[in-house]
Amino acid sequence: MSANKWRHATSTVPATRHEQSAASRTAARPHLKLAAATPASAVASPAGPRRSMQALRYAVVLVALAVYPWVASSFFTFQVAGQALVLGIIGLSLAFLAGYGGMVSLSQMTVAGIAGYAVAIFGQSAVSHISLGWPWWLAALTGVVLAVIVATLIGMISVRTDGIYTIMITLAIGVAMFYLAQQNHTVFNGFQGFSRVTAPMIGGISLRDPIPFFYLSLALALGAYAAVKYLVRAPFGMALQGVRDNARRMRALGFDVTAHRVAAHAFAGLLAGIGGVLLVWYNAAISPGTIGADALINILIVAVLGGMRHPIGPFIGALVFVLLQNFAIDLIDRERFNLVIGGAFLLIVLFSPDGLLGLWHRARGYLHPATKR
Image (cartoon, rainbow, N blue to C red; front, top):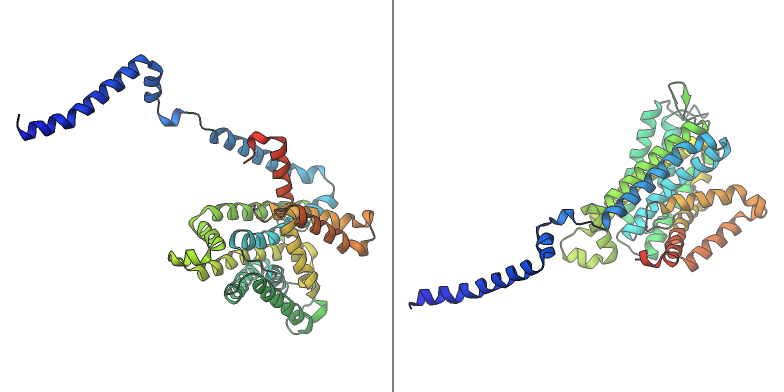
């Protein structure tokens, strides 16, 4: 036998034996043959029912939100739900930075205040010698653009620090903006601020009426929620979370850590700017107290109460915050509201660092151990 024939025989015989044994096993067990012929896509996946249940939950929540203003009173539609949606959007900007970027910024209400002041200055208000009287859509768009620019500048200043230093820098910026607005009478009208900053009329409907304002806030809140959900799964969001977890390793892999952090501040500024426009329409006024130190801390409380590891958390935290704010007089003297909200904040931080969402997931895990992850 030649060398070529020998090599051919030694290479083909084991394969032939293997095929014969596999064929015999398949013939002996016909169900294996059927399983092998079945495409992988036809095999039921546990992710399918899970997605169906999630879609069903989303549909139920959307229907409930759409029906809510028609069954609730004007107080609960505007004063509670509307305000919670607005604060939730601003809180979402902080949750995005802190939860996905690892940057706790206390200047998000400042960014929202920039947008609100821009609406009052470039639009219409009772202070006619300062307000320029631009169309409402142009004033609102200008406010959002200015909010993004200011947030980007804040990001360029603060992203080179970490931890407590980032918190202190952004807090200092927020306090500085408060005193600037309070002491400047030429542009910000001092401590009086701007009143009668009315929401626009579209088709004879005032957007400050309870039901229209609720639907406007709901639409923008859903858009902000969807944008964050999409962005955190996009390559930019994944890289941002990598920067949060280990900035040095991401830098070694070739990622521009500073650019990702500044871009995150810009996107958070967009969310805060939208919330700021809604806030000035909700209050029909804006003053230095709107962006004071108490307001800066309130946004942090809103984000932490609900949970910063999911985009829905700030809206849950905002709802709890607004309910406590409106009904604190029934629990304790209204002057003691800070004591109530501070106690709730302390309990959440101590027993559930992930906020109310963390408590919910923990309780669901106890009730349904099989579904606990």
